[in-house]
Image (cartoon, rainbow, N blue to C red; front, side):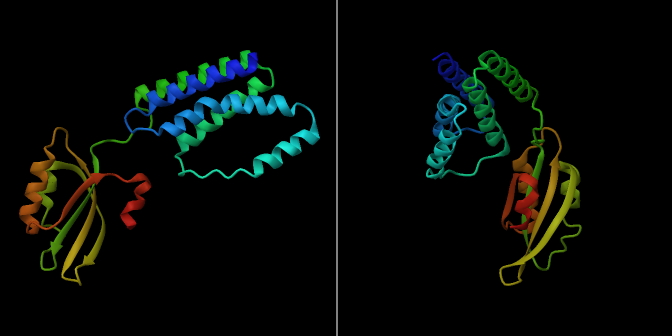
Length: 211
């Protein structure tokens, strides 16, 4: 009962810590509930199996019948799931004090990394897509606008569109501090004839550039 009780408390602590860390990007209620009960479930499984090999194989067969259908998570989500499982495993084996200390240390590390913004992207880095007519020389037409509003510009891709009558340009840019994005887009619209312009956050791993 002590192992299961501690595992339940640990699961709730991990779930609360995850909610604090992900309060900006959001989270799913089902995932939070799963984190809350996962350590207790793992602890019960370990208590039931014990050192009985036949019981362990029976339990493995029972779990093999369960199919988990969920959206693929990020590396952070997977790490937190393993974190919950490890804490439940320690409780189930009877290492309650070790489990509590382990959870406290990891939760503190996660909160500190979140507070200092470790690994966060620079919000000023954006991906810019501009559609221009085919008769417009894209190599230099936006140079003065970019010089006024950005500190870094990199043309990643040029693609023909609309039956070859237009070009779609994809840039990776870094805006200057305190730049008004609307003014920036308005000046670009003047140059491209008020065609489509899309300014978005930099995609993960720049994979969206290939879309």
